[in-house]
Amino acid sequence: MTWSILCFALGIALLWAGTETVLSRVPKLAAWLRVSPLVVTIMLVAVITSLPEFCVSLFASLRGQPAAAVGNIVGSNFVTLTFVAGLCALWRPIVVGPTLRERESSWMILSAALLLVLAMDGTLSRTDGLLLLAAYFPYFRSTLAEARKQRQDSTAAAGPHPGLDVFLFLVGVGMVVLGSSWIVEYGSAMARQLGMNDLLIGVTFYAFGTSLPELAIALGAVLRHQADITLGEIYASNIFTGLAVAGALCLIRPLPVAPLIVQRDLPMLVVAGVLLQMFVTTGGRFVRAEAAAMVAIFALFLAAQFMGFSLSLP
Image (cartoon, rainbow, N blue to C red; front, side, top):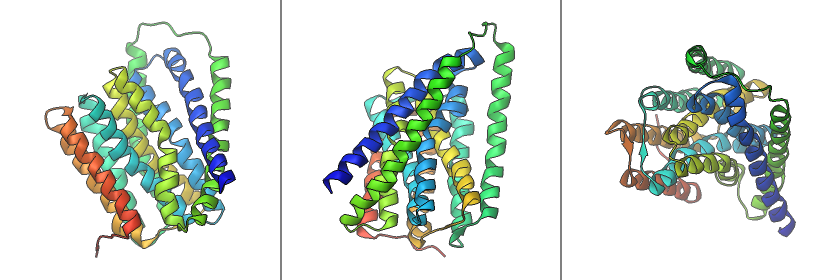
């Protein structure tokens, strides 16, 4: 048990360090691309911070733990949407820009709702994977169009070619993959010794561990008064994980979905997304009282995992 705990902690450390290595290169790449921080957040940072979810779920699926793979996707999105967003706003209320209110928030709810609908038959098939990836394409295209417009409007000169930054970026990605593999291997061993099943492992150990990069970036953005990056990273990461990551995993190997995910976890994710949208669209601020409500929902979700609570869906 001691060895498993040590290696699991080292896996999280590798995952965190790898993500930080990647993100430290993002500002220089952004200057080279001549786009806004929000666009960089959506197109680069959110994708990068979703690498742990993809790697952990992929390794879990290949090791014969499909419940943990799906549980990690849903659980990680829930942790990010409730605990991470709530913690950031408890630290400092967040002013929400119009782009986040009108585009990212709606797409975030759509991604969770679509995942719920496709999972209702108990399996995420390769066809479902294609549908999820197809749903992500319009969102990516609209963000890409915004980036192109910003490049055309920008008068700043492009920076030098970031050869070293690209190399360090790839090194960071390798650290993320290795750390994710250790989390799956040693987290499973540790959780099984505690008598936990695959679904519970996925929505607790894996989900919280793979949400650490999002927490680090979002909290750092709050401290720097970068509200768009804070919620932009949370929203875009949820969209990418719910559509692109889940879709890619289904294409690699169809995933059976545990009944509790359909009856409890995915409905709670949709409700949390709708509630957060209500908060950010009323007054354009995400304040501490609303943040406390989101953290309370996370506590309810966590308690439900251990108490076996479920919702009754037709």
